Length: 461
Image (tube, rainbow, N blue to C red; front, side):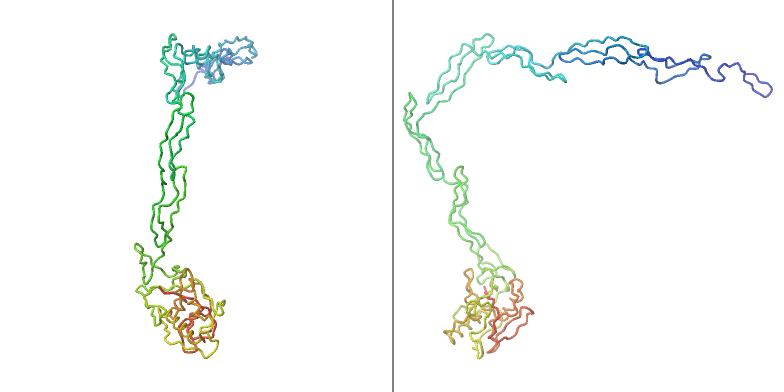
């Protein structure tokens, strides 16, 4: 480079100023790689390639295949079909591998069989061939004492015993004990059961050479097991006077019922709370009562059921129970009936009927006494008599409710299922009338005693 004045000029003698000149790449062959670097023919500048120069390998050869347990393998072989090559490649033989994992042949001994050759299943991947070999049976011990038979009472031995005299063994053989046979022809033993004695076997042995006489031993009866002990009845649960249940002894399973004691039922006689020991039962409104009806009234402190007749004695009650169904009266099949035996005025006046709670039973007794005294031969079943005749579940203390008792029945009408327009009470409303109540709107008023309405008995307890 020469500096002339203020200018810099490059000489034109550089042979690569217009670019480098590289020789052609050497191409790879089957066995020789091409070059990856070439040098400019005019300078030392190099050019590098990163692919396309590796040896190509032969083509068209028979692929290599692996040796197996029983067959040789080989590396690839044949004549290369690549243009310009044609090299003959001789494969390298890979000898057969032979089976692996087999049990070697072994000799038989006194107690174990042998095998004349290797056996088992080849464990080499891809083989799994099974070889059984030729089994050589166990030789058995020699020089032993012969087996001897068992008798009824003495054990025998099922095989020879002693010390084996075979070279290399010397094992002491005890044999297999044959248990004493036991007597035969005896009456078999039978087990005791829950209710019958059992016995061990007995009789005269019929086995040849024995003939022993065996006396059995009595096994006492076992008695049932797993039964429930006797237990007392409660208000709501039945009891049993003796042990009961199903015997759990194998082979028995007998059901022992004992004597069932029916549930006692709650005792609310003149008591708000059940009087039976250990029971604190109280009824609630709408509960099913002792007679199967519905509880329509509760007085926690009690109310007096007053008697002015000899039909019953005055007592304290805590509940009113409505009957499960209406009474039947009239000629005996009617579901509605008159208050009186009379179908028209003049009617009998019943003196002393009350209207309050606790008066209905006495009202009923007064009505029946008055009607029987006045009309002893009349067979018509009027409201009070229909209630007195009513009986269910052995309860027969029903009566025609008083006016106020009837109102309690109205208040619980949904529980008892009454939807009739009118219902009689036992409270008189003058000579020709008696109190009734509408079960539509609850109105109470006097109704002629000749009218027919439904009747629902109640009881006080």
